[in-house]
Amino acid sequence: MKITRIGLTACGVAALLAGAVACTDEGAGPAEPTAKVTAAPCANGTYTWFNVDRRDVLTGVAAKQKLGKGGGTLTNRIAPLHTPLTAVTFAKGPRADVKATLLSLGARFKDSDAAMGDAYDFADVHRALPKNEPNSTVVQGAGEIVEYTWVREMTGDFRYTCGDAEPTTGRAIGWDTDGAGILECSTTVPKVGARQPVLEAARIACGPDSPAAKPGKA
Image 1 (cartoon, one colour):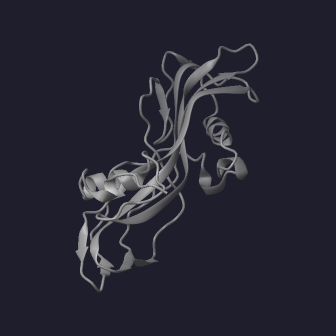
Image 2: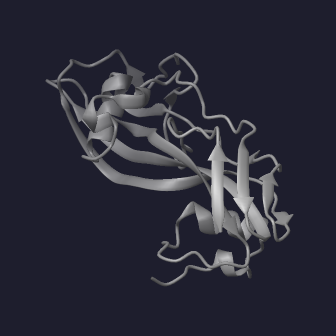
Image 3: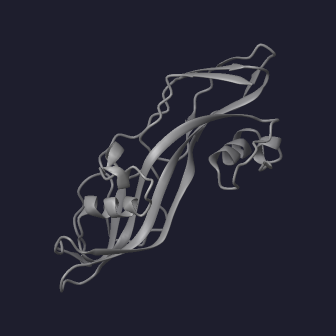
């Protein structure tokens, strides 16, 4: 199957903040400290991270579109599933620097954009969100075709210590890449892990029993 894609975005990504137990949030703008979060601690402290994870997350999927032998242009719009977030949530202690916290999270992954010069504004809580704008994706070949989008998110719980100040604890989330893909419902995708967005997109658009929704072998 030959695919030609015109106008798809390929940078900037977001993520979903889940399971937080925090009191203040830096995701949509400045947040006021609560009783548990006090003034900022000293700078140049030490971050300790745990429960750190990086994975690709499905952010949108279109309804499957049936194409005949000659193929055609995909016209179904991608419906959003997740709203990307860049945020730091504080649970206890002095309010640490948000940008420094996010950059520390990104630096946990040596191949991330954040570890290589803060590319794509990784630590900007006001960054623009990826948009599922209309694209011109041409597929040459028959089948039931599904288009989807994904983001690569990073999450982690942290403890920040600096000087004699009370330790700060919280959770951070960010992202450093995004993308789009196409699948065909009757075709198994080889070499794909169980958590990959392509399988989730196939389960949603093609059905859980479709060949595309089952991990393929190498």
